[in-house]
Length: 111
Image (cartoon, rainbow, N blue to C red; front, side):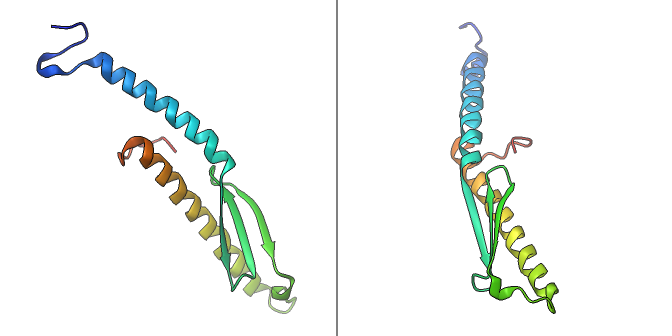
């Protein structure tokens, strides 16, 4: 039997190498995701939120036409909707990139 081998052809050394390679790929992907952004626009373009691959909000743009001192609630709702959608978009981007590395295998704690 080969070193590190088990009956049935299972080789622990190969498994460790594959895990290390996946770790390196994940680290590289995490660095790349920090540079990528996603955005969400709501209210017909009145509010835009941009988030990065670390699920951080990086900018908000508000069209001055939506600013009404007598109706702050509408602006608040639009900002919340844009931010929440941008963060969901970031989650989807991360999941998509992770699936490329893990083959769709959900590994808890990676992000």
